[in-house]
Amino acid sequence: MLSGKAVMINWSDVALEHRNVYYEWHNREHMVGRVSLPTFFRGRRYVAIDAKRDFLILYELQGVDVLTGNEYLAKANAPSDLTRRTTPFVKNAIRGLTNVRSSFGIGVGGVALTVRCSPKPGGDEDAARYLDEVALPKLAEQAGIVGAHRLETDKAASSVATVERQGRPTTVPDWVVVMEALDAEELESARHSLLDEQQLVLHGVDKAIHYDSYRLQIMVTK
Image 1 (cartoon, one colour):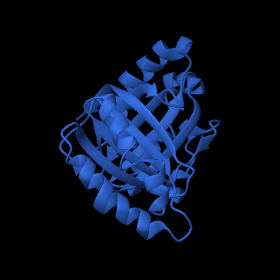
Image 2 (tube, helix red, strand yellow):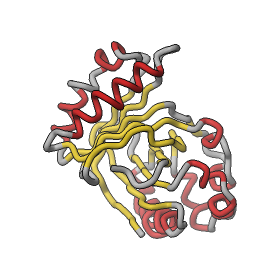
Image 3 (cartoon, one colour):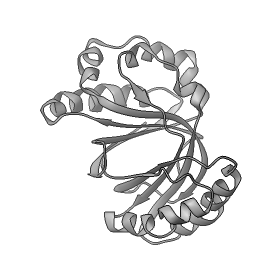
Image 4 (cartoon, one colour):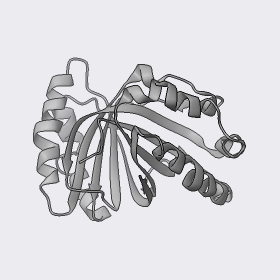
């Protein structure tokens, strides 16, 4: 189960020659700083196994509203010198401030699969019913799957451009399914069964579906 009712989720690229600087900033300043806020419960960073972008980052939150609140915005609008020097290395960002619509499972997995998608026009109820009541609960019952979640982006909150993010073009996703597992083989099994493109399209999801798999690098908790 996810902690909290919202997730800040981010996919991005960082070139190999900038990784050490990025790790120093993201590990010791960004993640620790965010999780120090009372409304942030846990932060995770994953590195690509089979993905279009290098990194996946998740922050589990009390609710999406905290990301438009004074405490968070004060921090995001006053970036440190290290943040200003490092964030230009972060490229091709996709970022969503999302509400947790369903969450099943028992813990945090060493690997994760993200499925970015959107419902077809008029397909919202069918797609949500299939994912929340059929696919994700069934997958979460499998021994090798430890988490199965559906997130829905708050477009208005996600469009707020803080000082920290200025100058970084960012794509906003729509729906995101996150699967957490013990190993990559379990993710592939989920992808090619209940989360297969044909199954999703059959149940109200638009055919523009993006699959990416990642390995956990670091997790920061309170």
